[in-house]
Length: 268
Ligand code: ADP
Ligand code: MG
Image (spheres, protein in one colour):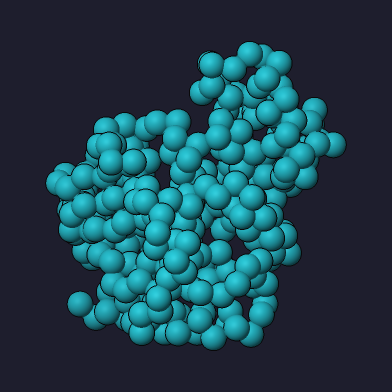
């Protein structure tokens, strides 16, 4: 069932347009159609979750949106302009925080700000402080990466991605390696940050509840070949509690659809 979108979302302009994107990976042993004619429009300020079983092309689609991978055919437009490579308006955050171990927490966030040569060093320092505070790590400014827990590392990675003020944040299973308690706290934080900053966020996950907790829309993908199977609107008010019964209702419907894509992949 299609649920109408809030007027604030439908009225917003398109931020990212994915048009008929296909991508095939071939090696000497095998070839896989990672994406087959995928089209999707994401509006400004929207929070979209990509969900689907392992290997259905979620990361490939995210990388193509980022400009890190080029499609074989089709295209991605960001603000109406063809994406031909990575840009500072679309930053990616991965499952592994990919922090620099030789820099402290502050140094890692300052590194992200190299993307802003228009700012003075003192402006960059102020911005780094602001984002470390936003993710609750101001007291750990001078800690080394190896001293941090997994959740803290992802907070630093989030601060590093937000600091250059990208319009679009592309997140690839950023919380997948964390324990449930740390994740719950990060759901609250990412919702607060999104509501304050109104960034456009594309968030890859294979966790249905996580998707329902965060997304305005959930794009369900199916594998072999990677395609968009179904799109779900989640009109729940925010901030959302991942353990709420309303959320569970949406999650069970989507979990059933997700299971369908997995069963098919094994029977085809
Ligand atoms: P997901 O993120 O949904 O798990 P991916 O986008 O990583 O899926 O992968 C989709 C398919 O493409 C998988 O079958 C994967 O093995 C394949 N694939 C992804 N990247 C490469 C690559 N660089 N070389 C070869 N095959 C790849
Ligand atoms: Mg992936």
